[in-house]
Amino acid sequence: MLEKFFIYRDIKSGNLTIEEKAVVDPIPRGSDINRLSDDVFRLIYSVTYSKEEIESAVGNGRSSLIATIRNRNFFPIKIYCEAIADAIIRVFNNNETSEELFFDARDLFIKPQKE
Image 1 (cartoon, rainbow, N blue to C red):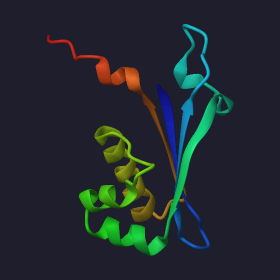
Image 2: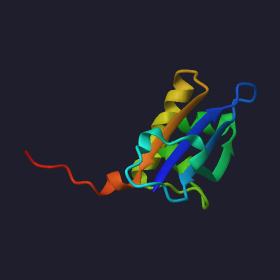
Image 3: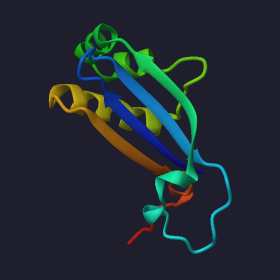
Image 4: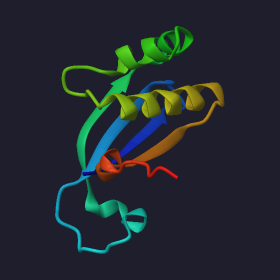
């Protein structure tokens, strides 16, 4: 499964939104997945957190942030959630407005080769 997580912070309110998108329709074999257009991704879930909630969780560390962003309907696997948490921390610490993460589930099954 190919997924994108778009993390953005509203400038006025400071609230943080995470959108989870995935490719749900078949794509042609041999397609360069790094060059897929945004229109092949479909919104799966969107959640917004208050500025205060996220700032508090960021201040309490990565584990607290992960516990805060996960909920009944939004529960990414650990490796994705850690990357999302790191992106949120970067957005808040660097006073940025957004970050986008891309994941290919096939990467989870590729074993590193021993040299």
